[in-house]
Image (cartoon, rainbow, N blue to C red; front, side):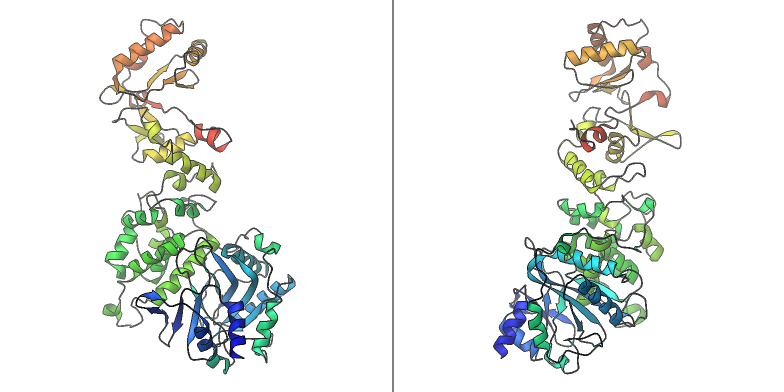
Length: 548
């Protein structure tokens, strides 16, 4: 009988066998031998169902598989938990799916299980369950916590992430032998009574598992209602550009330079619980890859010297629980806590008012991810194209057209203002949202590309035609031209001789004062000209053309 139950248990519940955790009454801990994870096998199953050891399993296999055998919605201990768990179960049943509702080990929380015939992608399983929660009108945002009488009792899903490169999170396994005697860790009916034969119920589910071809596994993930909205000035776009951060090589190390992370590592007691979890939400963008950093920023926390509360000290279990809860949150919502939100909750970054990134997770990210403009909506596909351009041609291909000491400026409040973040403003220029200007010539009186305004439309047309026929690279805006060069810097005098030669070749008659438009400029606004390629990336890269 034991062998049959062990085999049935493994068939239904066990997917990942290379590691597990157990709880001996003092929290969950990994089970290891000489530093190596102990596999989960028949002996561990038997110990669990006999009540000799309480085991927890990792919900999914890591990349490249990222698969799970079941998905579970966890409802914490509060007055709404039972009704909301069953509301979800009834909704799933209305879709001709067959969930099981389990009362937790404590007897106060509930798990709604849904099983699959074969392993499926965790992302698809989570999408199915998240959509069901939304469709069943079950609150999944707002205040929540064990023992709290709030409208929300839903805590999270297992698996708590779409992908993992390591362990992910665990769920306490059902049918623990000792807990079953109290009616807990048991599958229950609508009246809250354990089914008389738990093993028959588990065997029954074998024939009712969700097939991998079920269409609900491949639907679009619903928009989550009631999410915390961030101010437009705090956000980068209506699309989830945070998801693209994982594609940047070594960006997780880049955010270590952020003031919030540096302070967390040197003085973690500077943060209260809200700001600590806000920092975790930013690290959670990186899912399992960020788990080690989450512990690093938490490990030094110890407020006992301040309030003598033994609970206010770093806990590996609590950090993992909070971190993977945030991973789940980010995968549902897509937006971590902003730096301004951290300030409102108790910790203010000393660089808050002038740091351009606005989110810890965005620290050091390229302009393709940090650009936000209400007049230009960028999808993630757009941002991916821009990221590819940044990593191939990139901003240097633009700045190489000008001297190394070139000065750049934009108009702010009607005044031409020199800028520092030239890559950011260059992208704005290339997308056609804000013009970026360059001083011509440079302070050293040198140039690379050569600028001139012919003023006359007919001459400008003739000049453009001749440049094209002679394969001279140029960019034109009305009657103004940039003759594009990325070679050695030359003096302005030499540049004017080149320009004169090109004009003569095009059959344009120059007056004796033709060079005054350059040499007689004295006002700041007269010395700056818009860069070439205004709106170039928008019209070529994002609207179907090819960037050059």
